[in-house]
Image 1 (tube, helix red, strand yellow):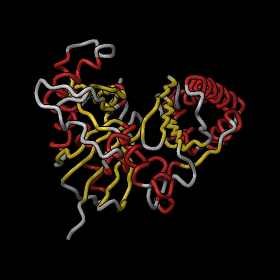
Image 2 (cartoon, helix red, strand yellow):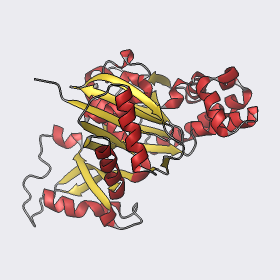
Image 3 (tube, helix red, strand yellow):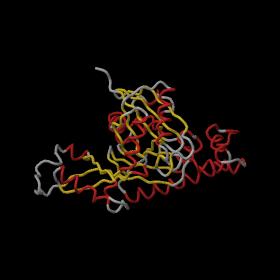
Image 4 (cartoon, helix red, strand yellow):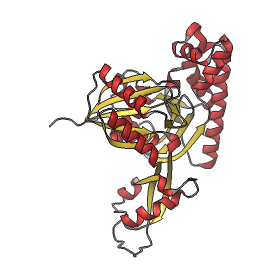
Length: 343
């Protein structure tokens, strides 16, 4: 039987990442620079330009797939763990949107909602929806991970993929990609830890995800990212930020070791330490001691050194989360594009 092939797509502010995966095996990974302002505040500004970029990148790299899995932008998605009375699927579909009343400022109808039964319910051998007919309550509780996504963002994604010659098979937020990878590597990863911190050193923001086993516990967001380094290098060299970004990507004149950049790394590390201290204060039983690093900043050694020293934690490349990740070039940058195909 032929292995099912799917294209994982991670659309960032700075880079488009594609991962072609067949039967859980990564066949190829490629990236392409995003045109300026094509992604703004979590939204694609031009469907046509985005679909053309995907189509051209696939063609140039001889990637062939009919189906795609897309990582939804963090700005367009709300995720929370909820505990609800046991109810039927129809009752849950009706009640789930109300769990997001404190998050959503617009109309409920502008969002699409989904859920996953958390693992502890499944391990107990319970069907979260059994024994509760319409109008009947049992007094039992069910634990869910609930997701609310902007309907317009999903419609954009479907239209972009259709224009690129693809059908959308999966659409999920970034943290779901990490859950999928943790589950896929359970036997291997749990020998290292049963509590996971995944640090995404992104271009517009830095996100710290905490998991116990494969259950998402918390996310901390720092509104700083690699774009901060663009500004630092721009000031240091007296060039515009676009050229500064080229300097950053190529470590022009060893700019990543300049004092200005070293100070920026320390500031980032201090903010992460504050986020970690707050997490530990809120979760006094936490034994979190390991972080897995991904995103563009994961390859900036002075930055990761500053983070490791400030947090006094064991740092791992996120490639360890991916089966066979050690043999995948620049795997840390493709973790989300790969993980979304495992959903």
